[in-house]
Image 1 (spheres, helix red, strand yellow):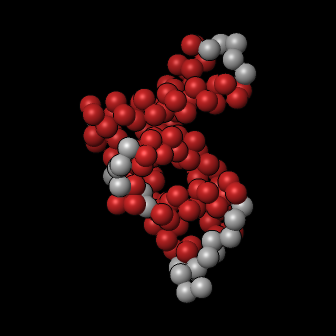
Image 2 (cartoon, helix red, strand yellow):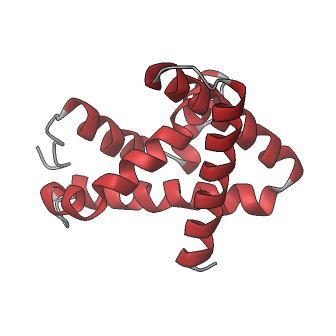
Length: 138
């Protein structure tokens, strides 16, 4: 699976969801549209997981990538400032798309640590809260 296919699939889904939310809530403010967009992502990913697992796994592979990146940051193989310099926009986009889906699955007993473990979640929360990632050897 190429990176381009992942990017195209993500962009297509983002555009479809953005269009759907704008059509359903044309007069909504930005905060309400953001909330509706996250809700729609959760629905879309759940439907995709049930009906089109290939596309679902393709999109989820973006999170797998950031799980690996988070692990490398925690192990201090890569500087977190460099990672956020390179991938901040992508981390935030992936977080906006997948956050509620992953949180919902985690609360439902889904073993997020098995596929999207602590390192992806740590990386996304690190950016949002601007916290320090402690290396393993501390």
